[in-house]
Structures are given as structure tokens and as C-alpha cells.
Length: 237
Image 1 (cartoon, helix red, strand yellow):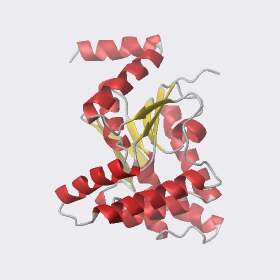
Image 2 (spheres, rainbow, N blue to C red; image 1 turned 120 degrees about the horizontal axis):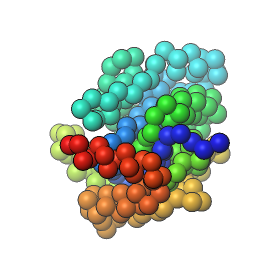
Image 3 (spheres, rainbow, N blue to C red; image 1 turned 180 degrees about the vertical axis):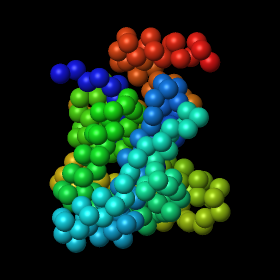
Image 4 (tube, rainbow, N blue to C red; image 1 turned 30 degrees about the horizontal axis):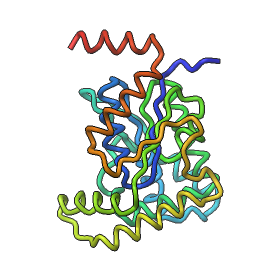
């Protein structure tokens, strides 16, 4: 049965620029953006990085988080218990916690169910690590971003410095390599491109250059009905 919503998946390792580019794509396509990594991080924060507490406990904690998606003035926002998910999940420690709990079947099950439920209701740009391989394998358009650990560590260093946080390049590079190892080598839903994904190496490209490449691929895959709707919305602006 054909999908009634248009799903774009954007996968890739930590620090590759997925969030920035997914937001830009969502705005350009006039559809919501779903930050699935934020869902993992928020659950990891609630569990303090420990999912080895039993399936029933994990399900209970997840049920209390109550994730919803809000769109205001064209900007998508992930809410948890009615409040925007904020910077409390963006630390290096919580990132490693998220990678750790992602190896637990119950964690992936509850999050996959929640993510698919959102995608059944609305078209999306869904960003994460297994969107194209596990969560939305029938998505119309699948994209995968990559870059060397050194490039990603330097980008993260600049981002943290702009926020007044102090980390060394060596610390960030080590953290990213650890995260890569956990993501790529886990037994359940390891990080890898879908067989039909378009792979873009962002190491030597600017954000705008990568965005142009991704948008061109999305428009090629977009069904005619969505193209007409997008054109009419832009014409009315």
C-alpha cells in the first residue's frame, strides 16, 4: 500500500551536520522536521544512561516522557511533556549515554513505534541514525551524510566554543570515535547507509553546498502531488 505521507530520511554519524541540514530541508519543503536523536538523548537523560533496568521500567519511563511535535511559524520543535527539549540533552556525556542505550531492543522498539506514528500522520524530514534502514525503510527519499572524525571534531569544537564551553580537540575527537564505534558496531540497527540512500561526504563542502545537493535529490524523488503542493505554497508567500 503506498504511503500517504512524504518521508525524507537523513542519517549519518555524530557531528556530521544532520540537524542543521534537516531543519533547512524541512523549511524548504514546508514539512515538519523530526529530531529522533533528541528523543534518544532525552530518554537517555531520564535513564541516566542505564537501560539495563528491565524492559518494564524502560517502557514506564518512556511513557512518562510523552513526546509530541510542534510547528510554530514554520519551525518544528520536539516537545517532552509539553516543554521544548533543550540544551540539557546536548552535552557530550548525554550523547554517549544515548549511544549506549541505543543497543537495547526495548529502547529501539518504543522509539521506533513513536517515530513511525508521527510519520503516519504527517510528511517529515526524519533525522537520525537508522531512519532509512529501520524506522522508515519505505521512505521516498533516503540521504546519508558522512565526514571524517577529525572534521566532525573540529566543527563540534567551534560550536561549543561559541556557546562558551571548553573542550579540547583531542577530547572531542576521542568522544566522536567512541560514539562511532558504538553506533556502527552495535548488534541492533547499526549505523549504515540504506542500500538505496544517496551518500554525501560533507568533509570539504560548506553547509549551503551540501544543502543544495540534498535538496536537488529530494526534489527528484518527490511525488508529483507534493511538488504541486510545494509550488502552490511558495507562490502564496
